[in-house]
Length: 232
Image 1 (spheres, rainbow, N blue to C red):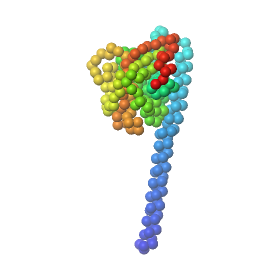
Image 2 (image 1 turned 90 degrees about the vertical axis):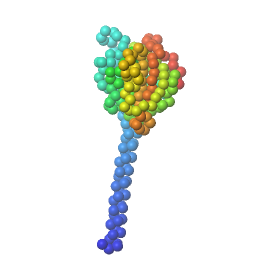
Image 3 (image 1 turned 135 degrees about the vertical axis):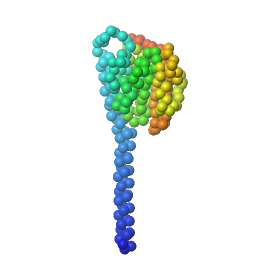
Image 4 (image 1 turned 135 degrees about the horizontal axis):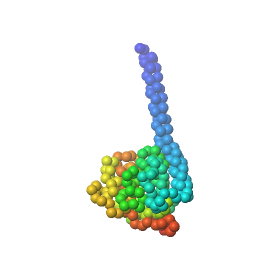
């Protein structure tokens, strides 16, 4: 091969490699845009639909035996049944709570771990939420501190939980959603709340956990807890 032909082949190869890098870069850019922007748009729309569904359900006449607790066993995966409010994250912060913690469920709000307690019940009311993408309801959960409150609204009551502590654990540390976290054989005697999300925000190598206990149960007829008007 002559020197000119070799140089031409090298230039053609370099152009081809450059085109490949550009294509790969564009694909990655589109993927990042999808993850950071579009999944949030879709999730916010889904959360709006879940919120409307919950409110609509609450306005309908009550059936059954008139119990004021949420019948957790009757819920379908992805079905909304409550709202979570965290004043530390803003006076307008409100996200629907749905049954289940699969990806489809978490794209609609924060998800309730099946077989954990319901709002206000003795045991551990445990929920999970995305910290990045898909609506990212727990994006700023690391700002929550001991003594902050987390309020859960159901059809009939407001449940105010007070944060006891936060902790970083491994993804395999499923004990955090036990009825009594850290005490697998203990019989629960109080109503607890556990919030779980990924840590750090843009990775999933750890889990950020917020532990809280029930401080007050307030009937809906009494109006929302004053803390919701105060904010963080």
